[in-house]
Image: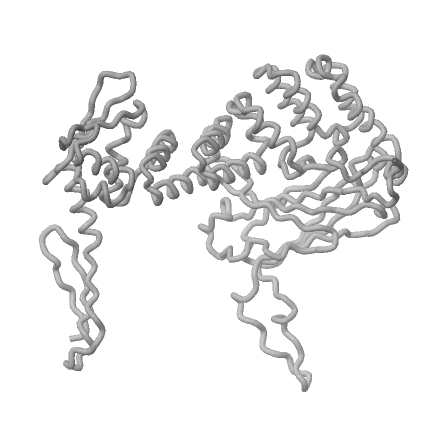
Length: 479
């Protein structure tokens, strides 16, 4: 007999037993018996019924009279948590709990409310998490050193940073929590989300509550994704009005705005109408003056006197049409696609009327030269590669070249946008420069054949191409 289905017994699922290879010598394939699912169910039942409990967890909420009790088992608690192990050893030794079988635990009301869910995880290794419980459970996993649960909750939170409805959000509060709790992976995930989806964050109810250190951290970044620098200035002005920080913080925030990335008419309007500039305008007067010069002189002339590679003259990832274009590719696994779009030659007002046309090519199965069909020695065509060879690629090249492009380099950025919690969010950002026409690791390992792929929204791949022109210092600025 090569195999049979055996009923494992009451309360346990059936299991297939592979019983040798039928040769009768007993040296065939070993038995494969898996009752792990049933074991987990038994442990969950053990926790829920409290059978054989040898310790009582007495939960007291700080500042409240309510007390909850959970019947538990020393072996399970000590096995899953080194903190519980130490607490139980002290309890056994007659410590604070007086040697009794009752362990008194004081937690916040929020922690007490989910403590039974936390303890149940220690028994069966599974837990149902709601967004509003995530930080509380993460705090318990951190406090009691349940590392695997902490990592799982960190991953869950990283995947659920987008708020629903659209104007809600949790990335800011979770960033601050991760920073306090020391979870660097979660902190970095939150910061990345804030950087790549700043426009939606600026419109959320969370924005006015951003801490000053986080605000200044964001303002220093060149990889922020947002509509325009004007949008960022208006959001900072809203933050200043709500937070009313000290003068130094306000001045540092305003000096981090890249005024040269705004058109002269926008700068004139801000100087006339902005309350923040009326109060702190003197602290940014030099930046405004340099910005007007930036827009009035040719880049070549400007480079004689200023470092045009400083942050003031460096664009961020702007979504406005002058800087790039969205690209929605329906059924991306089907065949190659192409698109054309225009961007401004440079951010300077001197180049405001000049445009560069770009050609973009998307291929779902781009082949390197080594894998492309070639002619053999006798002139015969070699067999084509398998259809599953190759991977998605995007190539962006200028359609034309002109003398105006001298002294300008173009950094190209590709955003991959996906639907999360009912809203479109940026999930991947790829950068490549003028010397490289294509993105080498674009969607590496992605299967676009599956319509259920996380990269597809309603069967389409949503991209946004941004071209950032950077002026080069052809001449060393005067000292």
